[in-house]
Image (tube, rainbow, N blue to C red):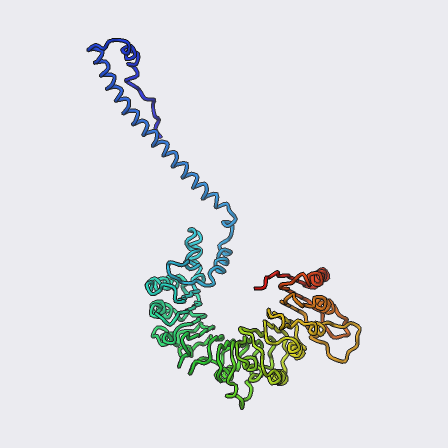
Length: 521
């Protein structure tokens, strides 16, 4: 910056003369002196203004330089933060957790996670763009409120960007679209279909008419990596579907079996989820899946009179059975009546809607027949608000002598309980008492209970757990290794009895007792 010299004033040099004029009569010469003074003063004012502007400009320049330095300091100081010590490999892993699903949405909503990460800073952008897998998960949804009808080009452009940036990474695609205006999805579907060779998992919850779209039909025979398929026609079952018939890697399917004439590579399916069917189709499909290992039945049953004369389907490789019950009584009966599972080791029973079988005696006969003909050793059971409660739950558990893991989530209805005083008496191991009957759940090692405090026999529960901690070897009961108990509401009635179980943690038992003071709605 150039040096600014002091202002040389012309008018100041005349100040003594001008002061003397204040006490005298102004002559013609005095008037000339005054006029000259005013001219000099005007020049001085103009010079002062110029010098003032120079000084203000210098101040602004210094102020701007200061702000620039402060921003620069702030930026470079941020480089000392711990995040910049983190190697790109770790950041990449964190980014992957953030981008397990990139939902492509209109501009009015939040951008996809991968886009957000790539706009934070230059370093993050370079890392994000260097990870094709970060861009390989794409979800497109329209629940009827998103303005996709006016953003068709934007949706197609976003889809194209993700296809380009994902490069050769396997794709996970979710399409969920309401029946109205599915034409807005078709341009984006073209970009997805062009990359069908990279499809690893695809979920299609779309109108039936979309399955007939040429873009979707073009993927037939071009899905070598597809291993998981989820199909749902949102406005009725499909009449015919064969575009996924040639899928050499397909091993997991989730769909509604009411779809007619669906062609899939059933022989290679290992994981199958069937949803909401009350006809004979589930039975027919299961009979085509000899290599099935995991089966989920969600609201499957009803109209079993169509299958009265059929033999149960034998699935030798199936080890996990997950049953979600709806409103029909036959949903609980179906798997036990129509399946034989010699290697079944894990069962999950849960409900979407509370179901109380009317003809329990007949249902119980089917359950007994199932275990008798299957001769399976079930080691894990999860009852999540299931219809098995009270004596029925005990009777069911008596059929599972090999059980090692038991999880029970009770219903909120206090009249319907699994963990009753009778259940706890069965669970309690009597030390030193001779009994000719077989012990209850002799191999139980992991116990998890989510119960409600009201009317809970807390003392009986504590005694049952304690009795199973390192029992005598001659009674044929294995020691518990893990206990998790969660009590909701009315916890004051059982707090003192159950909190003592945490003392066994020091002895080696993995104990976790929680009390949830939830209000009754």
